[in-house]
Image (cartoon, rainbow over all chains, first blue to last red; front, side, top):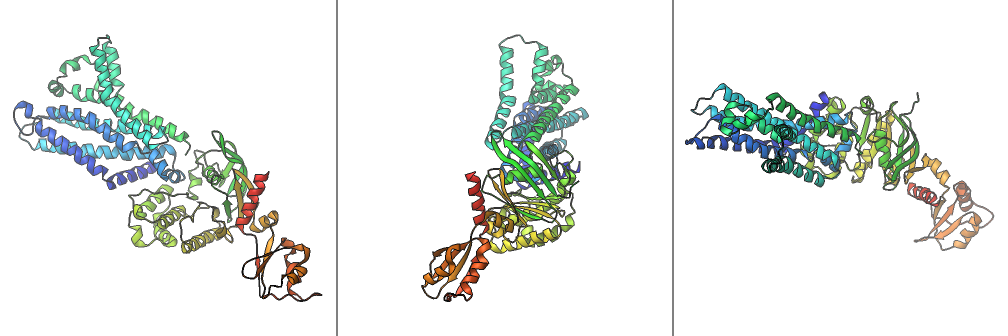
Length: 274
Length: 312
């Protein structure tokens, strides 16, 4: 446990040094604040708007942005250290390979968590200072959005680690990371939409499973259908009635999307010839 | 149980088709400094990686400090090993102190000794506070040595430790190594710079194409190689004939620049030869201004063993 914290701490410190933490936090905060101020535009007033609208727009943006940040942060984690020659020395220390991998992952996940919580939290503070009264239910939805965003980031960090472990070359790892992003974030939903529009007649059951097979979709469903107030604004109330995926199941799936790639990466890494 | 610090028995390591290490036996005793020499790709680094447990042997067995270095329970072993890798690299955005602190914590060593370590390897207090990315090659190498010495290792692997160091730094580097050896640390040293190993290593091991081709003290290797000893004489005159008649059949005579004549003879004959040249005898005395005896250098012996290996 101690070893994990030492490695995670070093990773976090390095990310702080090379401005990753500051840059991502500022980016998240800027976007969250912009969206929360513009959030009231549809209702006709300019100012801090209802939390639900912010959640809808912010989570839609998160789906594109956060996986990209997570993959950029993580694709270099293993292959880069091997390339630079720091890995050989690290592995000669009394550290198991899974400890090294998990420790580094925890460090990178902490960077994502810090940026998300501080960045989106800033928007939360701005909304709280606004005139509009905000109910407990809304705050719960907002907190759930931040929490699930951290999970989404962690899931794509884990996928980045897997990419970084599989290959021997940094360029290839970067290529895989881009492909993962394109595939899960853009192409997957297009293909799914095409399937539905094409009327190939896949049942609700099959659609549910297909949505779970993508961490980004699990995140979207969790945020847009998990809370009544949000789904009304998102126009997904109808969908929410049909989708039979419960909140705990969606959370479990996202946790699985963190654990599975990481476990696979650890297994591959322990067999890798350095 | 054996008293050896490390024991390598019939170890072969294959990477796909290529054999990096072929049937190597090696034992390292406490307080011994062994130099491993060989050209690039001779299998030196591969052998060190095997002994560190970073890779596992295809054949054979390795025991380091009484255990298998690649096993899951190798942490107590690794705590007692220091390693200075070839082309050492550190995380560029951390300062020297942070780097050493990080490695000390990983090794479970006390960080209190870090200041003494910095002083030992000669890193200035102002340099410690700077980021590693601003370090020169020599400073990085000093930091690398400092991390290898963390926790007072019983076994020290130094892979090309002096590349890129200036001569003064090399001197202090070998002084540190000698001090450790005297304290009972086993040191395995890899190098291309053969001349600087003379006088440092108790034993020299020559590697070629993954195989161990020679292993022994410098004196043992000399007698094994049977390379000629060269005696250089500076003569006041060009009177070589008199010298030649004195020398006789036992040695080859060549003329070098500056009135220097070189005689090459077997190691066992050298004393006799010197006596014949310098002492009074039946024939006329040879005038000699200066005499120098050149033992075969490690470079020459290394070349000899490689030639022999290639011929086989």
